[in-house]
View 1 (spheres, rainbow, N blue to C red):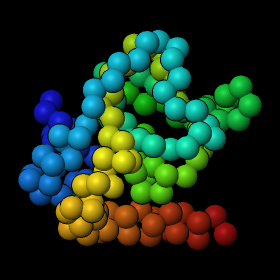
View 2: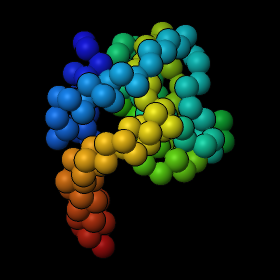
View 3: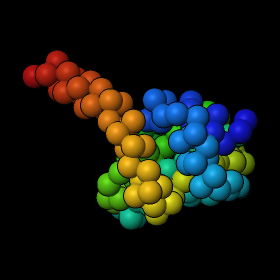
View 4: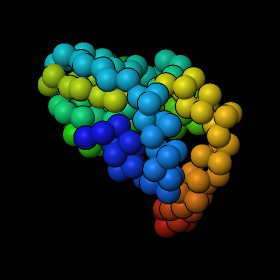
Length: 142
């Protein structure tokens, strides 16, 4: 799968043009992780976003990773909010098997936004939709 196709499958980037996807795709770096390796650690500064190309990971939280939040596989993503806010990670992600990811650093992403701010404008409808959905879920629980 070409890097721009991988980005196009991510909801956050789904409204971007092919040209913009290609620009961001050039910034993606391939990384391989062995089974049992920690990719990101809860509390660390968030510096990258990941698209899983192959393998499986689990997201865990709390001391010793006792609370399992999610399990993700090929085609799924994690860390997309890191691109936007750079705040500390709220979970640890570790591999359940050998895993290959495409990684987009926050540094490279922000550099692209500085030269092509219309990319951010293209992402706004998706971000707004996510905020509305989160709001709706909060309202349902109250």
